[in-house]
Length: 111
Image (cartoon, rainbow, N blue to C red; front, side, top):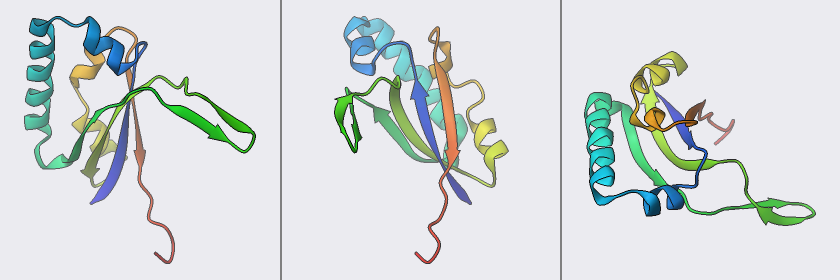
Protein backbone atom coordinates (compact mmCIF):
# COMPACT_ATOMS: atom_id res chain seq x y z
CA UNK A 1 0.00 0.00 0.00
CA UNK A 2 1.11 3.52 -0.76
CA UNK A 3 0.59 6.49 1.55
CA UNK A 4 -1.11 9.70 0.49
CA UNK A 5 -1.01 13.11 2.14
CA UNK A 6 -4.37 14.87 2.12
CA UNK A 7 -4.55 18.66 2.42
CA UNK A 8 -7.89 20.26 3.21
CA UNK A 9 -8.17 23.77 1.75
CA UNK A 10 -10.82 26.31 2.59
CA UNK A 11 -11.72 29.94 2.22
CA UNK A 12 -11.42 30.42 6.01
CA UNK A 13 -8.80 29.30 8.49
CA UNK A 14 -9.82 26.29 10.59
CA UNK A 15 -9.61 28.37 13.79
CA UNK A 16 -11.98 30.97 12.34
CA UNK A 17 -14.43 28.30 11.20
CA UNK A 18 -14.44 26.65 14.62
CA UNK A 19 -15.00 29.99 16.40
CA UNK A 20 -17.93 30.88 14.13
CA UNK A 21 -19.59 27.48 14.40
CA UNK A 22 -22.42 26.89 16.86
CA UNK A 23 -22.10 23.87 19.17
CA UNK A 24 -24.88 22.16 17.20
CA UNK A 25 -23.19 22.79 13.86
CA UNK A 26 -19.84 21.60 15.27
CA UNK A 27 -21.49 18.40 16.50
CA UNK A 28 -23.11 17.79 13.09
CA UNK A 29 -19.77 18.41 11.39
CA UNK A 30 -18.00 15.90 13.63
CA UNK A 31 -20.76 13.37 13.02
CA UNK A 32 -20.27 13.73 9.24
CA UNK A 33 -16.48 13.31 9.63
CA UNK A 34 -16.90 10.20 11.78
CA UNK A 35 -19.34 8.69 9.25
CA UNK A 36 -16.81 9.35 6.47
CA UNK A 37 -14.00 7.86 8.60
CA UNK A 38 -16.06 4.73 9.16
CA UNK A 39 -16.62 4.37 5.38
CA UNK A 40 -12.90 4.95 4.67
CA UNK A 41 -11.98 2.36 7.31
CA UNK A 42 -8.46 0.95 7.03
CA UNK A 43 -7.70 3.49 4.31
CA UNK A 44 -7.08 6.04 7.06
CA UNK A 45 -3.55 6.02 8.45
CA UNK A 46 -3.94 9.30 10.37
CA UNK A 47 -7.29 11.12 10.49
CA UNK A 48 -5.28 14.31 10.87
CA UNK A 49 -6.20 17.60 12.49
CA UNK A 50 -7.22 21.12 11.66
CA UNK A 51 -4.26 23.48 11.29
CA UNK A 52 -3.78 26.90 12.85
CA UNK A 53 -1.99 29.90 11.45
CA UNK A 54 1.25 29.15 9.67
CA UNK A 55 4.42 30.79 8.41
CA UNK A 56 6.14 30.53 5.06
CA UNK A 57 9.89 30.37 5.45
CA UNK A 58 12.16 31.22 2.53
CA UNK A 59 15.86 31.94 2.11
CA UNK A 60 15.06 35.64 2.37
CA UNK A 61 12.73 35.66 5.35
CA UNK A 62 9.44 34.66 6.88
CA UNK A 63 5.87 35.72 6.14
CA UNK A 64 2.36 34.62 7.05
CA UNK A 65 1.27 31.58 5.07
CA UNK A 66 -1.55 32.26 2.63
CA UNK A 67 -2.15 28.84 1.10
CA UNK A 68 -5.53 28.25 2.70
CA UNK A 69 -4.53 24.86 4.11
CA UNK A 70 -7.00 24.21 6.91
CA UNK A 71 -6.03 20.66 7.85
CA UNK A 72 -4.34 17.42 6.83
CA UNK A 73 -4.72 13.67 6.93
CA UNK A 74 -2.87 10.57 5.74
CA UNK A 75 -4.51 7.80 3.75
CA UNK A 76 -3.29 4.51 2.31
CA UNK A 77 -4.37 2.95 -0.94
CA UNK A 78 -2.97 0.95 -3.86
CA UNK A 79 -2.79 4.04 -6.07
CA UNK A 80 -3.93 7.64 -6.46
CA UNK A 81 -7.28 6.55 -7.89
CA UNK A 82 -7.86 4.47 -4.77
CA UNK A 83 -7.02 7.43 -2.54
CA UNK A 84 -9.42 9.60 -4.54
CA UNK A 85 -12.14 7.00 -4.11
CA UNK A 86 -11.69 7.14 -0.33
CA UNK A 87 -12.39 10.90 -0.51
CA UNK A 88 -15.71 10.53 -2.39
CA UNK A 89 -18.47 12.25 -0.43
CA UNK A 90 -15.99 13.77 2.05
CA UNK A 91 -17.73 16.20 4.44
CA UNK A 92 -15.04 18.87 3.97
CA UNK A 93 -16.47 19.44 0.50
CA UNK A 94 -19.83 20.54 1.94
CA UNK A 95 -18.23 23.88 2.86
CA UNK A 96 -18.60 26.45 0.05
CA UNK A 97 -15.24 27.11 -1.60
CA UNK A 98 -13.54 24.10 0.01
CA UNK A 99 -11.31 21.66 -1.84
CA UNK A 100 -9.07 18.70 -1.12
CA UNK A 101 -5.61 18.04 -2.51
CA UNK A 102 -4.10 14.56 -2.32
CA UNK A 103 -0.45 13.68 -2.98
CA UNK A 104 1.39 10.38 -3.02
CA UNK A 105 4.12 10.20 -0.39
CA UNK A 106 7.22 8.99 -2.21
CA UNK A 107 9.97 6.90 -0.62
CA UNK A 108 13.40 8.50 -0.57
CA UNK A 109 15.93 6.49 -2.58
CA UNK A 110 18.41 4.75 -0.30
CA UNK A 111 16.40 5.41 2.86
